[in-house]
Image (cartoon, rainbow, N blue to C red; front, side):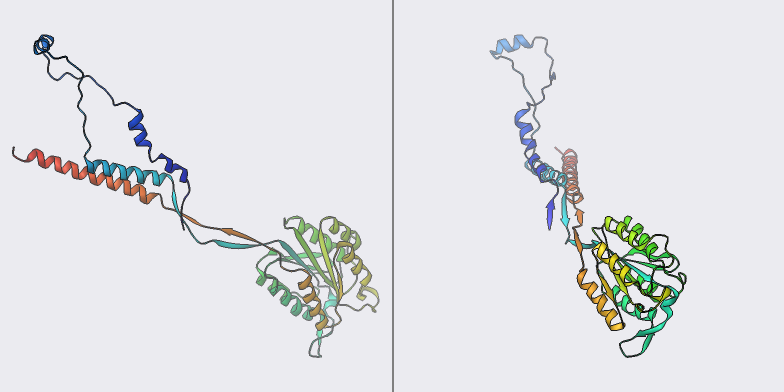
Length: 329
């Protein structure tokens, strides 16, 4: 569509008429014939001298061209524009952070797959979490791996292919053999502090209990709650194990309940996939639609038209005047 950015400037169209009507013509005295006895001649002729003037009359063509040029100049000042179709951009309103336990115990090959085989825990996690990331097209996703200490593998990004690559390349023990769940929560809180979205969701997956953190997990959960971070916890280890390999379900449940999240237990790959389907359901996409319509300025066309009209008229008038002067009387 076409529009004028400053349509109120069209009020200037009658300005020349107002100037002609309100301002008197310029007067200037100029002697054409000097007669020392002019007053006597005028008295003898019985006339009374008055002021006279020579007014250059505009031709109809000149008046038309100047009127058209003025209208085009005012139109250019009103800034005509072509408004293109709207361009819409989806802006995510949620940051989703995945914290994956990559301690050495994730290499244990005891996780039942959907086809009855047993997989290493990390392999089952790779398949399920990668599928989850593919379905979260509207969220910025970040990735943290934790073992002896937490490490950010990917900042919050819409480049989900990068996150998927980082997940598939994750290896057990790459962050150390132990589990630092509390420190992983602390790192997640710091990452969320650098974002400005309204919803902040952390999904923690672990198969053991905290054995290496400097910050207690429950204290970190309290800080997360104060920062508005919702933490969902997923356990895939063995609750009946002993020592470092035991899944601390009690702590995971308290972390989730403290922050307003939920705790899930995945006993096999099918259950783990169902957990992430549930997480996908309870955290629906939340996006803000930004619309922008590009505008192309067109003022140069009426301005060039005004210049062309005046230039054409004066070129024709000048040529006609030269021909009249050269023609024989």
